[in-house]
Image 1 (tube, protein in one colour):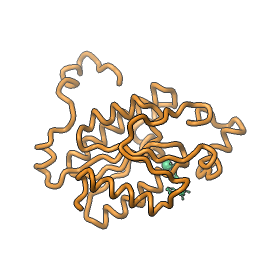
Image 2 (spheres, rainbow, N blue to C red):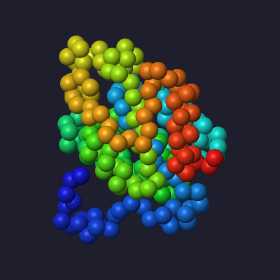
Image 3 (cartoon, rainbow, N blue to C red):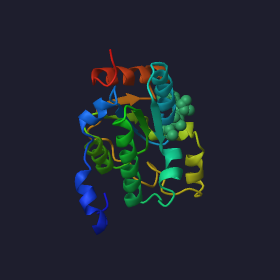
Amino acid sequence: MTTPHPALQHVAKTTGPPPIHLAKKHGRPGFVLWMEGLSGSGKSTLSKTLAAKLHADGWNVEILDGDEVRQGLSPDLGFSRKDRETHAHRVSYVARVLSRNGVAVLVALITPYESSRKAARTSVGERFTEVYIKAPLDICQKRDVKGLYKKTQSGHVTQMTGVDDPFEEPANPDLVVDTSSDSVETCAGVILGHLKAKGFLPN
Ligand SMILES: Nc1ncnc2c1ncn2[C@@H]1O[C@H](COP(=O)(O)OP(=O)(O)O)[C@@H](O)[C@H]1O
Ligand SMILES: [Mg+2]
């Protein structure tokens, strides 16, 4: 996280995890499901599947998908470690303010650094869970949903996570789903079960 401008330091001191009474005031408290993993691991697919199920149950759902949210939130940022951390920090801020107003927030973001995942957890507070959407690099490369791995091979794309940019294996995820061995439906079901076990969704 960057140090706030001196004129904003008094504000920084007053922002922390959302007070739970605020969430309760708005009825059903929201939550943040933070999904990390390599490009092509299945984050966007699972977030859409989960969003449809949550919508059907009457939730207000917001997907913060790295592919799209970058354009709106971080057009000024690139893919250096510092920029990726700053981007994750912005996403966690938006996730926090939405979730404290009753929104089910589904974050689909590579989040290659453990420091960003930890910071997001701290920022959001207790209604946060981190799920590692796991698939081996060679499977993601075979899927190559966006053609980026191919472009990396030909040198047209650099700083590709898992290839020439790091992906730190999540140290402490609340749940791991393996999309190379389990179907979309199975993984989504496991995640929904996890959200119920956490008390974020009713049983
Ligand atoms: N269990 C699974 N969960 C999610 N996606 C899966 C699964 N099994 C196969 N896939 C496929 O893997 C690809 C994942 O792509 P995508 O969701 O765009 O990944 P990401 O958003 O992580 O870059 C899709 O083509 C999807 O159909
Ligand atoms: Mg995606």
